[in-house]
Image (tube, rainbow, N blue to C red):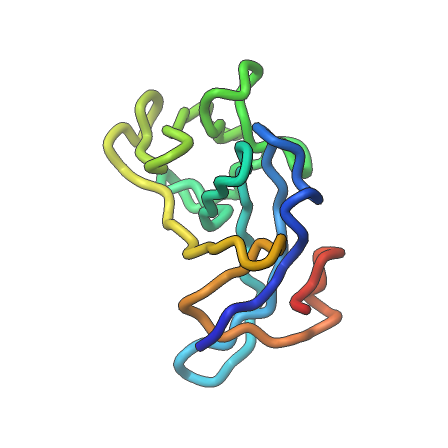
Length: 132
């Protein structure tokens, strides 16, 4: 398991989020799509799987729309659940106390990188930023 650059830090404006579809290799050897999103503020980034803990649906109510109108909480577009940006904990809605699944990220030489998993280059799952 290494670092996989998914985009440059400056590809995501500060206080915005961006979704990615990555190709993740699982323990059984199968490669499946892995939907994640990254939130950036300044040089800090945090990532989560794009899956609401309430019913497992995608969070973005419109493609790439992960934050509430104020940009202060993550919003599940289907159920209206609100999640803390830094912890992923549901603070309001049908799954209060549940958490989003975090994605380990680091900023390395200006790139946002995923760590702790094995990714593959796979055009079928390419989100536009792919694995570099």
